[in-house]
Length: 474
Image (cartoon, rainbow, N blue to C red; front, side):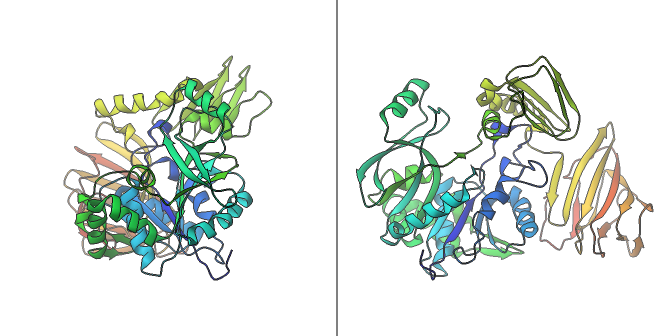
């Protein structure tokens, strides 16, 4: 790879991962879920592109609700990056257009477009394939990476290879929608078909030229949105015209129409981890062929995926099940039914239950909070405020709060008075009183919040002043 060539990693974080409920929720999608020891798919994706001799700082595209997950993850990795906020999700083609306009500001730097929720086990092969693709990108092709299929998978789209080009590259023959088993088996036997990885590599100018040709309405909406962008904190927000863009994937908008599409086969262990059975297939197994995470005890249990986030899961006499536990939900199903989890999510939505939407642990720009107990007219949270951060100055109409400092030092403002509190000290906040808490120390501040009142929703927050520019309950 040319030592003077930099590549912009563009990380797409728009997915919700409903098939990975209950770990993944609308406001806590699978790419940010802690899979153990702080590991997330988003962090893994970012870390594939940390070689500063090759890669520029990443461009992350996510929606408004997930912005603090992305920002916190970058900070934890010690990586600077640009986070572009989609106030309204418009699919991958407009999102990539925003990244292209950003990349053009620093020159026509090639963009490596990566979904944030995939697993790639062979980093060396992956990097070698990027190096192999770069000459094609420099010749103004749009490279898509096709995964050599290992099984007749029905959960992936496919790409059919076309005319042979230089090296290992082919023109894209056609894109194939997710097939039934019969067609997947036929394509695997026939050869020349590859799993559609959703990874692309191209110059921003090339992408925008093709987008303007095939989707001029989308191109103009994104161009105007980028021209009208605003920046707050670490976030870049496109102008309102972004919502005028059609909602179309890059496959439909560009790749199925352009003459510049090139397929580069990638023979690598890869998965989009789109369901719990995929997690099982990619996880290490014990002597009984079980994949277990967390506090799990098994007896006479075989071929199961068992994931505990806190409570002990004990099993006897089970075969080929998936069991996933969180604080507020437990999913139990045959592994072969993994694609049907979305039916549960649809049922939760229909019944207006918040378990499909909100995870017990919620990130904010100042830290995070986690629901511990909830009952009639009360709830308890564990709240962490990061070093040097501060919550908004706020008040509540319908609840009072009691704070107990667990560890760290708290600078607490009640009405006009500000005082320091330390471990084991507590403070009461009456309904209607303005308050905020700051961590002036060098370690995380942890405290327990007990809320009581007639209404405990997050929308009962009146922000009087906020360091992060927030106005709503976000």
